[in-house]
Image 1 (cartoon, rainbow, N blue to C red):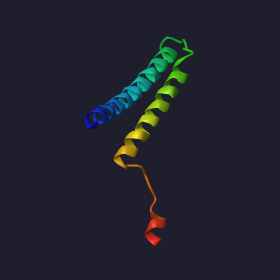
Image 2: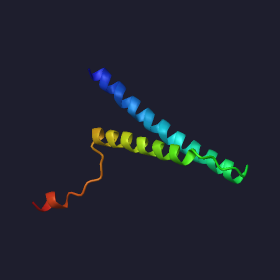
Image 3: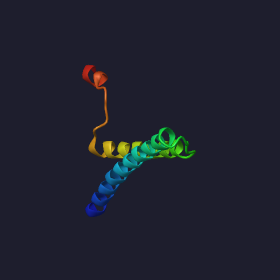
Image 4: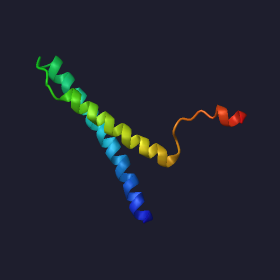
Length: 79
C-alpha cells in the first residue's frame, strides 16, 4: 500500500508540473499568434485557465500531504 501511495504522490507532482508547463506553452503560443502572425486563436485563454485550475488543485493536495500550507497561528499562541 505504501508503494501505491508513493506512486500517487509522484504522479500528482508530475501532473502538476505538466499542467504548469502546458499553461506556459499555451500562453506563449497565444502571444506568438497574436503579435507575430496577427491572428488570435479562440481556445488558448480557456485552456490556460483550466491548466492553472488543475495545477492549483494538485498543488493543494501536495501541500496538504506535506503540511506546508500557510497558516496563521496567532490564536493558538494566545490560547
